[in-house]
Image (cartoon, rainbow, N blue to C red; front, side, top):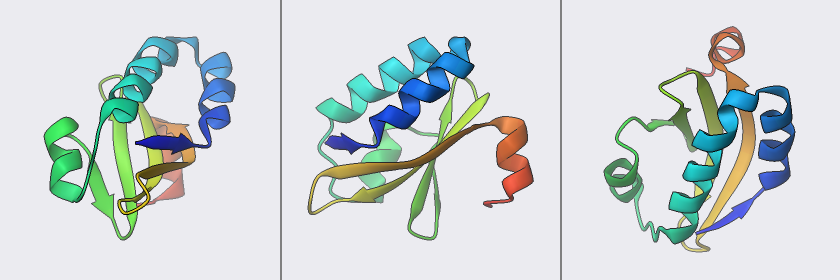
Length: 94
């Protein structure tokens, strides 16, 4: 898969250094993946949730939430945002 918006991850990693290794791992796994449907993502990341057309990935044991759109036909993962757990709860994306 191709990742769009990875610059958001770089900014987040600077603000939250403990996210660096888990986010780098997430990027590596996503780039190697070939997803055709939600079930494929779920097999790769068991804790991922689908909220409407958006996917919420738990990062670092649920300390961080990565919000992304996945365009299966284009093999794209578009990073919309990444928040710490507290900010995510405030946004009430659920």
